[in-house]
Amino acid sequence: MAYKIFIDGKEGTTGLKIYERFANRTDIEILTIDEEKRKDPVEKQKIINASDFTFLCLPDAAAIESADLCTNPDTRIIDASTAHRTNPDWAYGFPELAPEFREKIIKSNRVAVPGCYASGFNVLAYPLVKHGIIGSDYPVVCHAVSGYSGAGKKAIAQYEDPSRNPELDSPRLYALTQQHKHLPEMKKIAGLDYEPIFNPYVCDYFQGMTVTIPLYTRLLKKKMTGQEIRDVFAAHFEGSRFIKVAEFMGTDILPEAFIPANTLAGTNNMQIFVYGNEDRICLTSRLDNLGKGASGAAVQCLNIMMGIDEGTGL
Image (cartoon, helix red, strand yellow):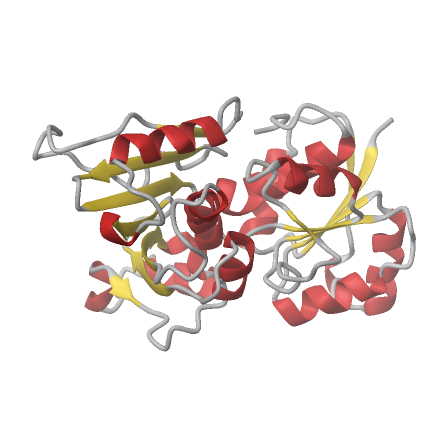
């Protein structure tokens, strides 16, 4: 039996990447909508309710509208927008965080795919709080860099314009008002009392990202070394298909060592690095903002909901 799949918003970056990941799959049938009717709610409702699974790859308001069009109790929605990520009625689509996240994805008809920065943040912050390394009131600061593919079609066109503004040659810090759209899910999913200070940069390369949380060891709930923190993360994600924890990088690391942000592009993988010294420790996650941070995570959730190998097509 082939599952009927509809991608609402297939023209956007995430929608296109999801569609590409279905290229060689014989277990699904893609439902399409006529181009001139893709914003027609009547036609859209008909296709959504005819599907087994519908992906929403839309701006938030449009995603809410499309979700409301679903009246078929057997149609399952996977939303890649920000709209439902903090809604308790929706499963949060990050199965590796804890067994209860995976179980809710399996059972739910509504799954919200995490944001790219939020995925990189929560893979670090959730275990820190869960295992009592930091308190929920810890003053968390987060720095992140991403390729420009995560900024949307308009920004991609600006970066790829031969006559572009020279400012685009350099990393650009944004979300200066500390109101980035991923902050609510970062706070809620990690179990924090307060939203972190979040400093994201968009940079002049296409895809891939790193997300970093620095820690002062004197502010931890219990005295721990970098090696001990690394071992907690290794145990937490033991057996994970897509998340791997590197060996601790201490003061004996080569001075020319780097953590580039683009080496996982095109994959659904994520890596965690722990490094520093006895006073200051940093944790960094590396992922593809279009993979584990978007389309890859969406397809992984689909596979889990279908009850098949979660790595199918990834």
